[in-house]
Image (tube, rainbow, N blue to C red; front, side, top):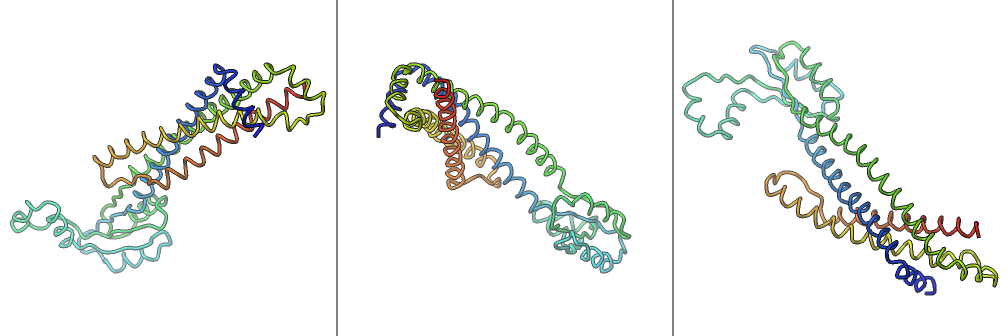
Amino acid sequence: MYAIRQGLKQILRHPTASLATFFTALVSFALLYFLGLLLWNLERVVQTLEKELEVAAFLRPGANVEAVLGEIQSWPEVAAARLVTKEEALAELVLDYPYLAEAKDLVENPLPDTLRLRLKDPEAVRQVAARLRGLPGIEGVEYGGELTERLVQVLGGSRLAMGILVGLLLLNTFFSVMGSIRLSMESRKEALSIMLLVGATRRFIQGPFVVEGLFLTLGAGALAVALGGLLYRALAQAVQGLLPFLPVLGPEDLLRTGLLVLALAGVLGAGGAFMASRAYLKEV
């Protein structure tokens, strides 16, 4: 209780430095939480697209379907392969575009027989597509991997940029906590010297300052999680209104991420305060 009471008093004793540290931590944790949710959501989108990724191989007229299909099914990268006849393809097209129902009876079916493949590893789509083009009886190959590959590139670049930005912000928060604790200890220099002379342990003296650092960063972290969660949910609802098929993170995901941010806030607050108080007491 002594450490808690003294920690609160020290925050009120230097409101300007405390507020500077608080808002520095708030910006850092808010960016960490909100950008972390966005990147996690982007990963979910990429994973969904990868699961639905199919490779379509169009067969030439007269191709030996059984031989080609047997060859493809023996490949280790292929999870499943099925034949879609041109009649089935036309029926699917008419379901999507009903106005073609009358036209299909007037012209010959121009669609080819198609082999549709699902892969065990979506990253192998380029290699599988290249091998398909080399098979006899294959007229063309298409796959929807371009969008997925671009999203993966964006995800990788975003991770790097976020890592650098958040790393700099967290370092700024860490040193801001150290500076605030240093100022608190300077203001109590005489009292601390007397405590050391009468036999107070360094851990006893450091306790209130560690509590001070914890209060500053945990308070900022809690507010950042609350604001970041509200902003993310508003953005997610807007996106789902436009694109309802896109996956979004649920309340459990937001809670889990928020707890990680609070844990990091605690480590930074306690760690910065401990390092600053330890260095100061060594000097004294």
